[in-house]
Image (cartoon, rainbow, N blue to C red; front, side, top):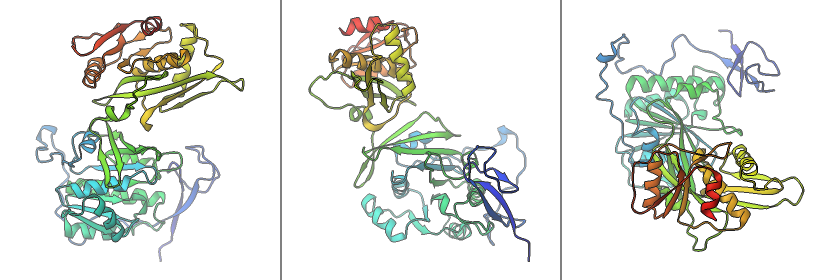
Length: 452
């Protein structure tokens, strides 16, 4: 009998050690190193007893490689296509992560039921009857989706060999295990081995594979960090349980942009694509309230108009509070310092609360002017007209700096019925829209003068 080989892995970062130690020298975490059994044969492959013909691996000139037949697969989901860069690339491996209960399985089951291609949905967490119950609410008449409840990769490849699907969905990678590794499912070595087998299968057969990945309490995908390096695309499905909106972002994409954003609305019948999020992210209030402004932002190629709410009140307990939701707290402190130093507003002894409605988080610096306007509006208790919007960055000296693609922001604001947009004086604007007035400002004093 062969000697059992064991090694030690860090459960946080995946680093390997020859013996146990209290602290991982790579990620500096304590008590994360665990012993795992290794038993790898000389040949481990996804291939079975009757494998398909393997392409010969030989070097080719780049202009001799034919990629014409590898057109992207349309998922019939415009938001999913947008984030991926136009559809699923054949042979690619996509990893989708998110909080428990956020809707990862629902999203991929919905896409699998809509796809016009033969799709195999592999679940290691639910039974076929449980998946059927959810499928009846989404799309009960699908004839192209096959459901398999299995966790052993060798059995999964047997079913793939007989079915030969066009797309494979695995829910989730942490539940799979390979017979070539003796450790339990979800361990570092099992995740690496199962992902390696799926990558080899995807690349050799040009079959796209979509994986669902669990995340840790810190928000990172569970397992070794190398898992995110191995796959082609890493998607994050995020949102607030108290809101009905879900946001799909790409943290890594070898075949498209990582700046795109997909927005869904959670309903009883599944996830609905939100094609015009600006109308949803802006509240429909008839009354003009102080502290509310509209910012024109850009996410990828999509212009968005979002509502920013600010509340400025006198500090009760001596130390002022600075609280933000959906906005960078350090940037808020910077803007408050600029207002204090450059514009003369005494906000050091006041509490400031900032919120971006809809439960989304935005990092666009073009929100600065809208944030400043909302803070000043709440501080002076003067309402800003509902048909005003803002798109500019604020510098440390109080100057209003230009932002990219301002013309696209202006056209989006005009389409939604806004009458005036405040932008930097230093932006080069070649368009002359008829339905909206472009107000140019160069410093914060100009903004205060225009609004009062």
